[in-house]
View 1 (spheres, one colour):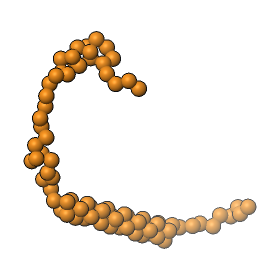
View 2 (cartoon, one colour; view 1 turned 60 degrees about the horizontal axis):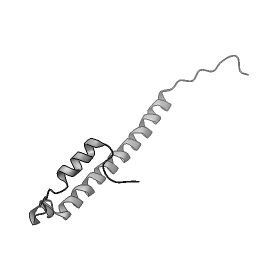
View 3 (cartoon, helix red, strand yellow; view 1 turned 90 degrees about the vertical axis):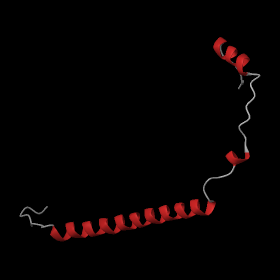
View 4 (cartoon, one colour; view 1 turned 180 degrees about the horizontal axis):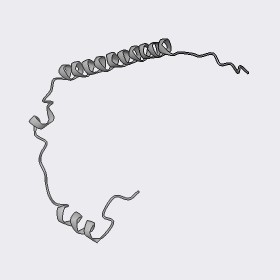
Length: 81
Protein backbone atom coordinates (compact mmCIF):
# COMPACT_ATOMS: atom_id res chain seq x y z
CA UNK A 1 0.00 0.00 0.00
CA UNK A 2 1.56 3.23 -1.16
CA UNK A 3 1.53 6.43 0.85
CA UNK A 4 1.43 9.73 -0.94
CA UNK A 5 -0.49 11.81 -3.43
CA UNK A 6 -3.01 9.94 -5.55
CA UNK A 7 -4.03 12.68 -7.97
CA UNK A 8 -2.89 16.10 -9.17
CA UNK A 9 -4.63 18.10 -6.42
CA UNK A 10 -3.13 15.89 -3.69
CA UNK A 11 0.29 16.30 -5.28
CA UNK A 12 -0.05 20.10 -5.24
CA UNK A 13 -1.16 20.07 -1.61
CA UNK A 14 1.78 17.86 -0.63
CA UNK A 15 4.20 20.20 -2.41
CA UNK A 16 2.59 23.26 -0.78
CA UNK A 17 2.66 21.95 2.79
CA UNK A 18 5.77 19.78 2.68
CA UNK A 19 8.00 22.51 4.11
CA UNK A 20 5.58 23.72 6.82
CA UNK A 21 6.76 23.33 10.40
CA UNK A 22 4.33 22.89 13.25
CA UNK A 23 5.28 23.09 16.89
CA UNK A 24 2.27 22.27 19.01
CA UNK A 25 3.85 19.82 21.44
CA UNK A 26 4.06 21.99 24.50
CA UNK A 27 4.36 20.46 27.94
CA UNK A 28 0.94 21.76 29.02
CA UNK A 29 -0.78 20.00 26.13
CA UNK A 30 0.72 16.65 27.03
CA UNK A 31 -0.42 16.58 30.66
CA UNK A 32 -3.84 15.26 31.55
CA UNK A 33 -6.44 17.70 32.82
CA UNK A 34 -8.27 14.94 34.73
CA UNK A 35 -6.81 12.86 37.52
CA UNK A 36 -6.48 9.17 36.70
CA UNK A 37 -8.05 8.27 40.05
CA UNK A 38 -11.04 10.52 39.35
CA UNK A 39 -11.50 8.92 35.93
CA UNK A 40 -11.27 5.39 37.33
CA UNK A 41 -13.72 6.25 40.11
CA UNK A 42 -16.17 7.65 37.56
CA UNK A 43 -15.83 4.52 35.40
CA UNK A 44 -16.33 2.31 38.45
CA UNK A 45 -19.44 4.23 39.50
CA UNK A 46 -20.85 3.99 35.99
CA UNK A 47 -20.17 0.24 35.85
CA UNK A 48 -21.80 -0.30 39.24
CA UNK A 49 -24.88 1.67 38.16
CA UNK A 50 -25.14 -0.37 34.98
CA UNK A 51 -24.74 -3.64 36.90
CA UNK A 52 -27.47 -2.60 39.35
CA UNK A 53 -29.73 -1.67 36.45
CA UNK A 54 -29.21 -5.10 34.87
CA UNK A 55 -29.95 -6.88 38.15
CA UNK A 56 -33.06 -4.77 38.71
CA UNK A 57 -34.21 -5.45 35.15
CA UNK A 58 -33.73 -9.18 35.68
CA UNK A 59 -35.72 -9.13 38.95
CA UNK A 60 -38.47 -7.06 37.36
CA UNK A 61 -38.70 -9.50 34.45
CA UNK A 62 -39.09 -12.43 36.84
CA UNK A 63 -41.80 -10.58 38.81
CA UNK A 64 -43.66 -9.79 35.61
CA UNK A 65 -43.47 -13.44 34.53
CA UNK A 66 -44.90 -14.43 37.91
CA UNK A 67 -47.76 -11.93 37.70
CA UNK A 68 -48.67 -13.07 34.20
CA UNK A 69 -48.53 -16.73 35.23
CA UNK A 70 -50.76 -16.15 38.29
CA UNK A 71 -53.30 -14.10 36.39
CA UNK A 72 -53.64 -16.57 33.51
CA UNK A 73 -56.93 -18.41 33.42
CA UNK A 74 -56.90 -21.80 31.80
CA UNK A 75 -60.18 -23.23 30.59
CA UNK A 76 -60.52 -26.94 30.05
CA UNK A 77 -61.58 -27.72 26.52
CA UNK A 78 -64.16 -30.42 25.79
CA UNK A 79 -62.31 -31.69 22.75
CA UNK A 80 -59.16 -33.13 24.26
CA UNK A 81 -57.00 -34.84 21.67
